[in-house]
Length: 394
Image (cartoon, rainbow, N blue to C red; front, side):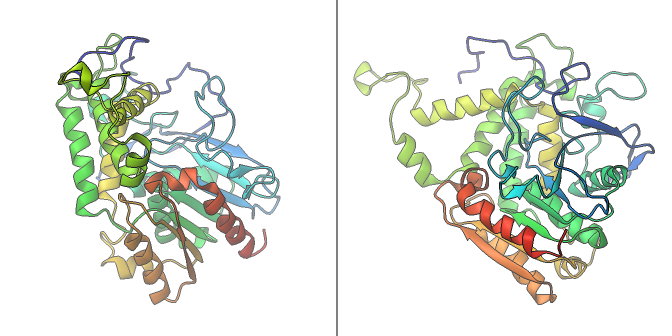
C-alpha cells in the first residue's frame, strides 16, 4: 500500500455489524444488570451475540462452549449468508457427524465482549446518548469476556459445560473459565495459547496499536460518522498485515511466495520503490479483507485484552491459579507456531500435571504456523472428538 485508497469498493468507517443489519444466525442476550469489569468500570445494557447448534438435553449435560480468536465471531460453523459474509471459522470441525458433533453436543459460540459482530463493543450505541461508544469504551480483560459468557450460560440454563474449547485468544478464555469457574467446566481444550502473554507477543501487539494510533483518520477512536474511505482503514489494515506475518511460518511464506514480484512485474522493467513482491500483495489482501468486516477500535480493545492476559495476576502466581483447575485437559500446540510457541502449551500441560490435574498434550505437525488450528483439521479434530467422548458421558 502506498498511502492512497486502492480502487474498488469504498472502505466504510467500520466493518462492525450494526443494529439494523441482517442478524444472520445470531441470537442476542442482554445482561439484565450492570457488568463489573476488572478495570473498575461497569457496563450497562451489555448485549451478547451468540449462535447455537444442536439440542440441549433435558438435564443440560451436553453443552460445549467454543471460544473464538482475536478477529473471530459467533459464526463458528455454517454457510455465508446475509449477516455472515463468510462461512464459519471452524467449518469442517463442527456439525452433524463431525468432530464436535452437533447431533450429540449442544454447541454455543458467543462474540466476545468488546467485539464488533453483535456483542457490546466500541461500535455499539452507548446507553446514555445512543452514539457509538468510540473512545469511551473501557479497557477490558479476558476475564471480563468470560464473565459475560458466564451470564449467557446462566441465561441458557447451562450450569456446567461439558467442555470449553478454543484456540489462540479462545484458548485464553478456556483457561480463564477453568480458573474462574472450575465447578462449571467438565473439560478444557486450550489450543495454541498461553498462561500469560510474553514480552514478544506484547511487542507485536504494540506495533499494531502504533499503526492505528498514527492514522489521522482514527480520530482518537471517534470516527464512526466518517464518510467512506475517511475512516481509519489504513491503520487497521497495516496492523493486520503485521499480525498476519506472525500467523504463518517462514517456510510457508518462502514456499508460497519466494521473491517473486507481483502484478506481472519483473526486474527487467526497472526498479520502483512501490513495486510489490507477491508476499506484499498477500498481506495487502488480508489487511483489506479485515477492514471490511471488523472495527478498528475492537481490534485495539481485544488486542489489549490479549496483552493483559495472565492467569496468575492477582492470584499469587501461575501455580496458585492452575491449582484451581479441576477439569481434565487436552492441551494442543503447533510445531511451527512462532506467535505462541509450543513451550507455552507444554508449560500449561506441565503445570496441570504438577497440580495433579489430568492433562494430555498433542502437538500438531504443520508447516502453517499459528493458523494451523484453523487449517489442519485432519490433525486438530480427531483428538478433540476423542477428548469430548472420554469425559463423563453427556
